[in-house]
Image 1 (tube, rainbow, N blue to C red):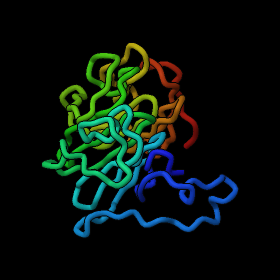
Image 2 (cartoon, rainbow, N blue to C red):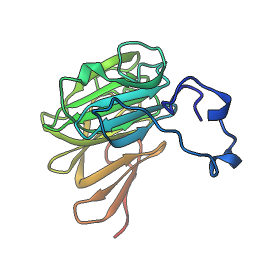
Image 3 (cartoon, rainbow, N blue to C red):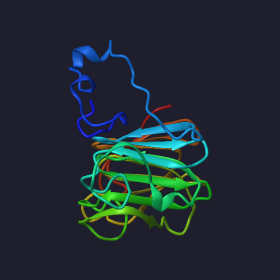
Image 4 (cartoon, helix red, strand yellow):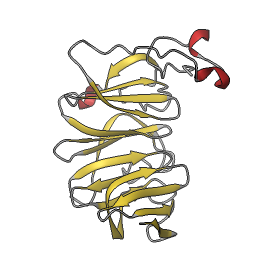
Length: 216
């Protein structure tokens, strides 16, 4: 689907918007990056896409109605556009939420931009949008990786988990009693892999609510 340009191959067109029963047989489209950039990671939101290169440069494309591309406007981009507010930095990880985006630098800085309707940017307030990357603090520690959907999660280099973006939780809150090496956010769950290889999940809500181990 390319309804908002999220495929990065140009404006929405009939040949890019295939019915579900035709997707399996569809030929992939080559997404053009500048010749000196090599894609290393891709993250997909509701209708926007982020591409992180091997050199730590971040590109965004697709829907930008909430500023989720981080390019300073709310205009959609049909081709990969550099997230200019982060271009002086070397990015190490990125995650596209439903209508917002997050990213960490290789030296542990954390940024978020886009929709903030439920405080998912972690800026201490609810509402509004940010069209450029805003710095987020997780208790003064360094961010290793992040994940996003309707809410946001981040783990630091010690594996400590921080979550935010649900109702009153508009600032990062530490989830005690768990250390993760990887974290993901779905529409209803935070889930991750602990340092000892256990899968852990928790319902989206205040820290400590609904947490449980799934299996070893």
